[in-house]
Length: 254
Image (tube, rainbow, N blue to C red; front, side, top):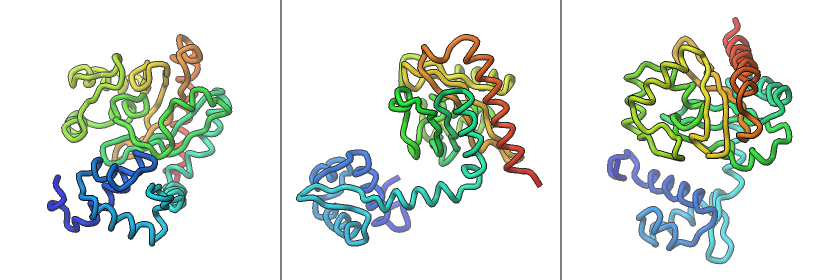
């Protein structure tokens, strides 16, 4: 979709600049221009406006996103009923499992890591996407758990929109293979991830659903050494299913 397809093209340009600066971490005007295809003069005007509003910092010729975005993100996260309800369950599961536990939500055809409890598991945690980052659904256990609760037509629409990119040599990369995998996940109520997103990480997840369909998933992640065999497929699997059920009961209790 081009800028002219949006009702307010200048807003779309601002968002592109913000996303580019977020990806780059810090950058000068020329770098952002090259990243976005927006002219230097336009980049400068948008950045200057964002800086005056407190959303961008400037140090010399370098620009950074300000912590104002963190405040907004935290407020959005706190206001999501699912996240508030799931927090104590995620914390408890992480403590019981002794591993990293994630809440992933479905939003705009992607999975978004909305909350994480680490139980001190910093080694594995350092490799995982940061909280707030979005990922393709087909590459994670949590994402596949979400997809498994949709009909195939809905899954196809997501694939048509965002594709099936390969992350590792174990990533599912065909529609037929994904369809078979989702059918299996739906039957057992569990999704497994074995190096499909990150080569060294394995994961087990269960979907969180409503009458309208899936809204998220809860998962436990760890290194291949930490998570394999009976521990992954039976012990942790049972804990994850119980946690998902608890969230659903608490979230939709009368």
